Image: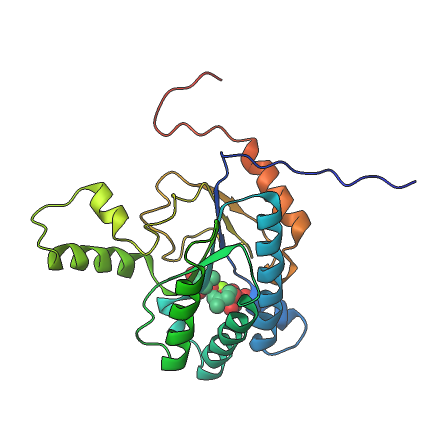
Length: 235
Ligand code: IPE
Ligand code: IPE
Ligand code: MG
């Protein structure tokens, strides 16, 4: 007998989900393969998860793809991550509903890559669903960047809203849920300002193994939580 898969319903309480896609290296190591192989599988997982988030109706998805600290990795590994981004930009041209936004400093990336990133952002800017790709991203650098923009605009004092409006994520609401795979329970310089009231979900599953089932598990867990935002609410 066939059992119908339980469908998961998402509402406005979960309008933004973010992922710290960790564990590609360990996934490859377990298979005695080079780390690059793990990143390649991780990229496949990323595309599946973005598709499923869209299908579920989650308006904004953010992924942490490359941090400002990841430059310290071996040159070959960094090069392979750049190539994966480049080939993803090619495939992204076929997407119909996604607005692409790159979070981070593009200016130090290869020039052709910078141009294709900007072109993709421009081409998709009026679309309904957002995919933020944090690439050469650091939360501290982002806050410093926002402050410098405000100074350049002549600000003498700033409000929380001013800072939020000058972050790379200015067009997105704060994340409701941040998922980190591969067992590490830390933020690693991701969305430091925006995570003030985010819910966190940590799983030991390595990113290349993080599939639709694991995503549903994270979402179900999120819906069991009560968010107070500093207020007092009835149990
Ligand atoms: C995450 O996987 C991908 C990036 C940081 C680019 P890792 O490469 O950090 O995988 P582990 O943590 O070494 O297993
Ligand atoms: C965080 O993972 C960055 C990305 C997922 C892109 P890392 O693997 O770089 O984080 P740490 O070094 O373990 O904190
Ligand atoms: Mg890691």
